Image 1 (cartoon, helix red, strand yellow):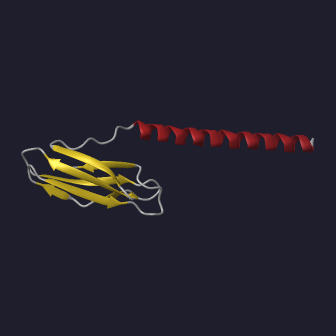
Image 2 (cartoon, rainbow, N blue to C red; image 1 turned 90 degrees about the vertical axis):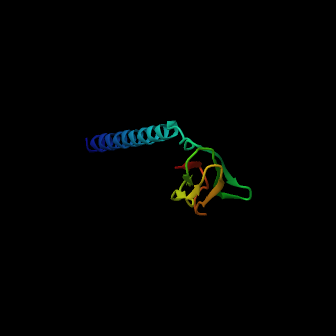
Image 3 (cartoon, rainbow, N blue to C red; image 1 turned 180 degrees about the horizontal axis):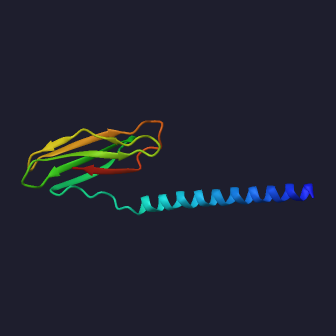
Length: 120
């Protein structure tokens, strides 16, 4: 009887652990799916921008923008840096017709740049 109770207890605990891990995995998967389904931020109106990573440094990103609108605009580059904190580049103000670049650098301990967006 004692072995039967011990076996039953172990089975119940094992089942609870598996159920908990399954629920945690489902939650994490759902969050990852929801995050990946979100649309990337669009370039602010009036600006035309090219974004990318530095040619020899995967941790440095840039946004090179031109103000095609009729009013002064300010923008900056935003880098999603994986395991390291996200970073913003310097704020650049452009008059109509002007071009400028904002750069930022992810910390070297992270996984590098995951996404580059232009913020208004």
